[in-house]
Amino acid sequence: MKRTTLLAIAVLACALASPALADDDCAMCHDDVAASMQHQIHMRIDSFEVGGRTVGCAGCHGDGEAHMEEGDPALIRTFASAEDNQACIDCHQNKHQAEWMASTHALEGMTCTDCHSVHVRTNPLDTCKDCHQEVYAQFELPNHHPVRQGKMSCVSCHDPHSANEAQLNVRTRLNDLCYDCHQGKEGPFIFEHEPVVEDCRLCHVPHGSVADNLLTANEPMLCLQCHELHFHAALISPEGETEVGGFHRENPYGTDSMTVAFTSRCSQCHSQIHGTDLPSQT
Image (tube, rainbow, N blue to C red; front, side):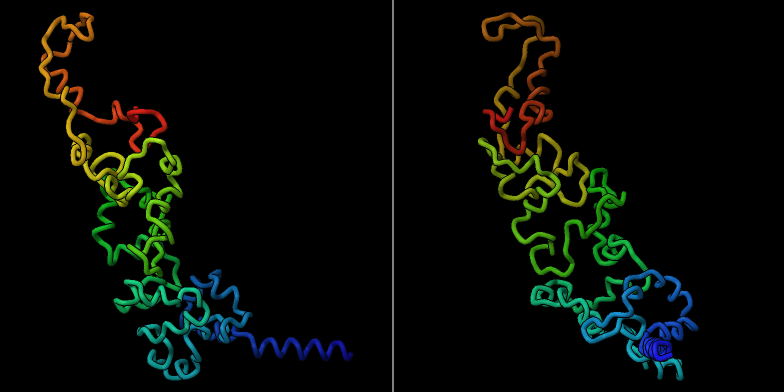
């Protein structure tokens, strides 16, 4: 008997304390939102106290009793202002640091809900493209990182809460972010290519490019920005048989064969662009 009484008291206490009843009340009017939130993390942890706030409808929107009686959106937290961000920050303390306060997004007065949709799960690309149209357009170019294909997302390289250069998802050099995926380009090499060591963006466009391999320009024009042409490129090759290194050889490609051979793609001969342990990067 005593055990049954204690059990009944415990059940009653849980019913009175549980935010599930309040959530059900909200669902009476907001059934579409409640359906989308059914398996969402904010609803699955509704029995825990986080930052002094119970997660659930009331945990984010505040006491909704007055709102339920009047039906006035002004009587509930709607996250229409930066002050409402405090409800998010109470739980997500790690995102509210000095770095965020110095970030571009924070300095432009953006709120959490400008990027995050609590009720509906969104693709980061769909969120970012609203402001970064010029970057989104680059993913439509012939060569691009596979963001549109769903193999990557904007947050694979960027931390939107960060205050470092371009809000990149790296705390050291930009190259270290690239090496997370392109490990074979890191080295160290005996014969280094100086631009590679300095900054990958000297030769590559990170989002998308018309040129192959995300290059800023096609070969040989990219290489000629730093390197001169080989002198062989200006040589006129006689047709027919010619002497090369003391041997008579046929030249089936005509008088412009040297020009064609040395002004096409530098990487035909210099294949190890990022560095090599062998001489001449061959």
